[in-house]
Length: 373
Image 1 (tube, helix red, strand yellow):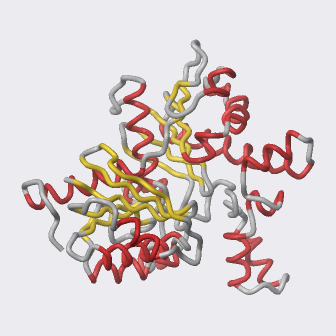
Image 2: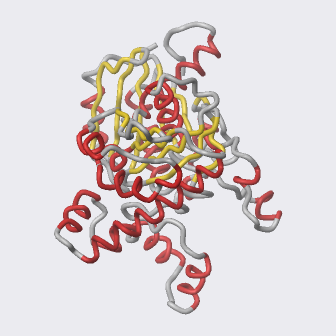
Image 3: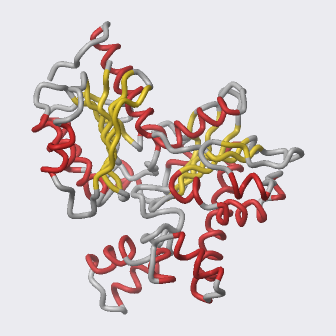
């Protein structure tokens, strides 16, 4: 089955055409919170073979979807209702879903959810200590993010180490323009840093990560800021951008190397939140066998990995400086004697999307072939 994997994220619109697990075509189109060029998308897909199915990465499935689902009008409406829980990613994903459907109207589509991998985390991790009315009426709970990336990174780490995924305690670090951590035990997520929305957790390129809810209320009541202004600030003008003026980790690291005070502080804040999160995830798994870095920053920043490892020696994390500095793509960067294996894994959400799409459609049809509309 040939699957077109569509991944709409903050870094752009990524497209991969996979036959089994082999990439036949791939491209990335520029995208931002305002969308992408539909004409450019059409021109690109017109040159590729027609897929048998389309798999879309969807940021948030809410309480409705904990497994992949065939997309129809009713599903599309529910996904639209959930847009406020993961802006701007959900809106971009739905725009991509609609655009690809218009270009390939005879090909069925499957929604693959970033929240699904975390749907089964224990109640102790999923539950917020808020009134039952909030939890029951509004389905308030920890949903998590980047599940497709975390699931692939954990499984591939076990493969690289030639160990069965069952029995392993893994902390996966998806670090990019957005970021989150996951505690993976026996191949299942048991905790994660993001919550009801992607706002909770780590410092990212433009997001504040976790802040005191009292601060938000105080800025509204005493700072005179509207809810809209606070929301936009915490989502779009915070994180590394607020601390240094740029959300590009490469620029931050370069400025820090020049002894820029703001950049050094930004790296310290980023590392502090990252290390604390990794330790919390290791507690959730009852220890740690492997620490995995993936995503744009996780894969390409030896500085971030080294800084984190230097603070995590108490867990048994030690990286070999030369390996850390020179690894490109998948690799083990641990010292020989380290109790915890530290790995770099190339993000492959496209593979996970393709696999989930094929599994759903083949199970439903009992055969291979093009998925009907």
